[in-house]
Length: 530
Image (cartoon, rainbow, N blue to C red):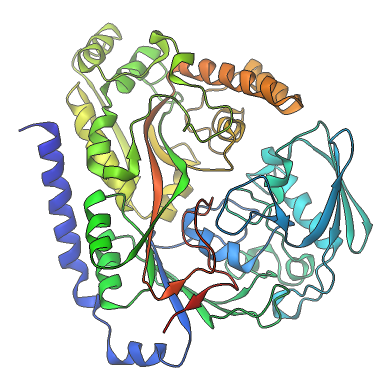
């Protein structure tokens, strides 16, 4: 039996088991159907079992995105349904940039009210939010703001941000979308309630306001009638926690949910499309990297890391995931500015599939009998299924990987403590390679799962940030990727789209082409058709 046949058997068996396990509880009861009647409600299912934080200044992951990005907002926004540098006004109604590109002056929107009666949004809130983002003792996102020199309140509705060096991509750090980490929070709410109370009870200015959180079940948000952008058409948005793709698919078919995060499975997507559901497969690519933790022996030996890299066959992952996936021939997806092309890497830097070479490298490193690694993996289907497949591939060359499945929120809480020898992580951001490289390889970065760091590499990234010329930045970013490739501290496992599924009743209010949110982002424009 080939590796792929074995994998298909494992995946199909697991899916069948999950469907059987969840079927009884997913049949809508008359009570639940009656509760939905009379309320114009959209229910969306995410692929995580729970959430850990709704404070955007703390660590947060894709499971929290459909909540925080409709409750809270940034100074600017991406055009609806598109990731673009043509930013549109949000909490700032306009802005100017100095001739040297270092000073941004924002004119804030007047009359915007915080949810919960916490008063008007002002420049005090912006400074409070950015000061928290920039504090490394408070926020894991502080590195994103390393280029900010000062934040100055001009008056209650004007604010000036001065950069250390010109950055043509700066507005992405104050935009209303995931991984921009630029969502604003209420100073008064934090000072009144305290940061601990705000962690799972957020206050924002967005089209929907937080109402309720039930652990391992759901979050409920209700319409903000006073929203500055106009009264939303939908009364409620409910986010359900459903880590099983089989459970989500069944809930779609029974009408329990209106939309969902789809499994990275071509057969599932084809089946749902044939049943009349709308499939939105949006970009930019998710970069699925297998990080190798050099803090742990024997992974501090580059020969062992090379053995792992040459054992991974991305073509098998492509077979598993179907048309939403692309086999990587470079480190970072081609949609990202500064992504090195295949020709930028030498043969010695490439992670080509070569199991015989893997076995030789292990033997040369003194591990002829193989090695054993113990790790946790998220229960979420995409993480689990991909890691199970790679577990089998690694086994073929003498690397035994013992997997302990945990819920998605716990997985994310632990990998930033660097407990895993291998970390599978799907990353997406504003399409700029500098952001991905800074997150993964800067000294002290929260997502430096590999533990590799080098002051000269940090200096190289600093040089990127300080370079006003786009072409200079691109060349420096290619050099940075070559430096990483030399170390074999990650394997670009696969690139994927971001498939989402919705009922034809759900009108987003815009055409979804690309987004940094890995889930649907419902807004005041969203409607439910009859």
